[in-house]
Length: 234
Length: 285
Image 1 (tube, helix red, strand yellow):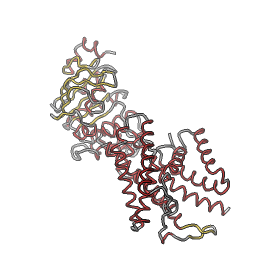
Image 2 (cartoon, rainbow over the protein chains, first blue to last red; image 1 turned 180 degrees about the vertical axis):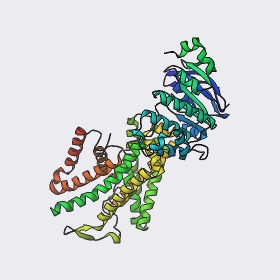
Image 3 (cartoon, helix red, strand yellow; image 1 turned 180 degrees about the horizontal axis):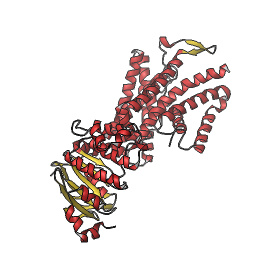
Image 4 (tube, rainbow over the protein chains, first blue to last red; image 1 turned 45 degrees about the horizontal axis):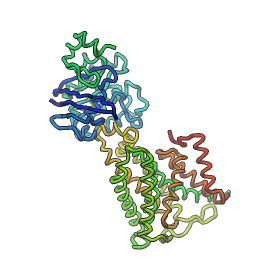
């Protein structure tokens, strides 16, 4: 397994957000974390990155324990992170946003570079010297994915990648995710859009109130009306 | 008219000291989020170090400058690495207390090492003399200060806009957490930026030695002016620090010439006006 999360508890101040989450992802898989807003999806990804470190439990990436590691060390070990609010550096241009990630990476070679990222999202090439603050939401989302890929990560964490995107862009994005998987990158994505996850992911975990309730192949989750109604329907 | 233009030049050389000290203050605030009250003390240490190397030990003027910058950068390293680092997550009141404590410590340390007397460091021979501008003799050294200040401004602009170190600094200043998530080693970046800011303050202090007295407490005096400069220009904004320094420097020079009693008063009136009309400063927000 590339990522093993074992019984983690994560808090925001006094509030106990993740209550004993365990899950595992194999190399080359696309796995989704499904659940409504506020159930702990973002916190799970932030725990993996070390941005909100768990108080208990263990997270192992490629067999190595992540507890006690700082976010920049975790990033350099090969985890790319795309936050739900994109967090593009506003003062840097599109290409600077991409290049800065490559420069901060321990791994300078690999499939992903400015050219291959722009092949994946051609619009980024046209916006090469536009400052991050002038990009639209969808453009920022693509740039955020591209920035994470520039590190040539082994694992990429996507937080709500489809949220707020036009339907056509969502289709392009799920195509992009399968292209990303084809280059050998493992994908872990958190989203509440079941249909998008069905297209993009192989397997899914359902999270509710800070713990994993159910896990199965995406196909089976979609067919299980009871589960969809209970945990995912809005 | 010529008197006014000439006094403007005097004001400009005054402005350059303020610029050098405000630049470091504002960079450190913009990146680390720390308002360093002891930044003026680093200016003072720069002056004492330069005075010691050049005036007392007779080392070459340029080498003395360099040694003074490196020495103060080292002091900055100790301040950031062993003290400030532990209060980033605390309330701003703790920053004020800690950095104010540093002012007292540095002032006393200086008294213990160099004594409490005023010292007037020597001027290097190649800077003595003046050239005629607007029919009056203008000190060569002041021209040197003005060109150094402008040179530092251009250099800082180039570093921040055109180098990867500068881009990493800008990215981290705007979003520290995301920068760390792409692999920026924030603790090391903070230490380096703090040392860099300290060296800028030291440059101001070292350059002031041939024309200003060196004495304990000069840091506390100049930090007030530097704060006025950054408040006018916008805290955390380099362009603002430069423009603010020029405004304060030139106004001080005219104040001395035209209304000697109100010299300080004028500056604070300008600051109050900026705070009322554009509280985030001319270039802030």
